[in-house]
Image (cartoon, rainbow, N blue to C red; front, side):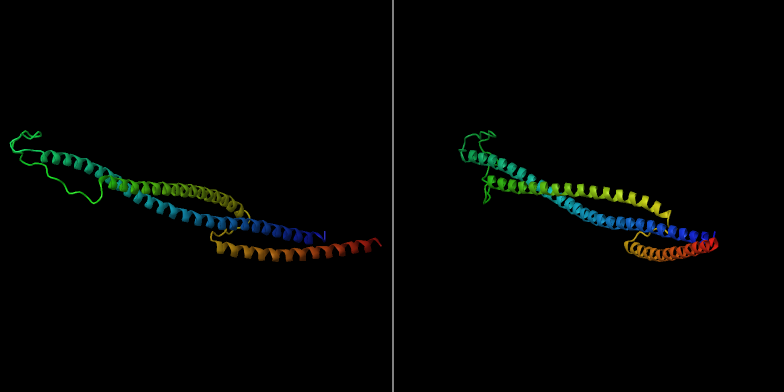
Length: 232
């Protein structure tokens, strides 16, 4: 009976130590979740920027590509118009005084076709130059679309990992509430501070447990000695 108080004290201190150790293990897991989530959010932010820049660049390339494509069409139309004008000019040059115009039938055409000024570059050269520019823009568009698709895939992947981490951390928080009346802090610095406090409490609990174990051993030794003396 004399050993009962010492044994009870020993059990209580062992339970306190083990509870604190469980709490510390959960705190370390929660801190790891915080660190990993911060890292994932950093990656997520970087890919968000890549996505925004890629979309802006893609919009500009698409606009420029459409402009160059439109320019090709415009030059081709100008080429056709010039060819018609040259044909009309050649016909006008063949008109003879008093001979009906084969186009309007008039002996005195009101506005015979005139020659047009030519560019320093031929229509075909301008068309090919515009097509080359459009092709380069198309290539840049495809490269940017590939970068954008990759960034969007990475963003989705990291967001999924974050969501999974949040769910796992929520489960750990529920378990943590079972061994601590104070919620675990969300910030990394505060979490590290909490872990240091718990580690200190564990050191104190270990010292108290060792003291109780020593006291229990001494009580047990004294009781055994008393029993021996009573038997004698």
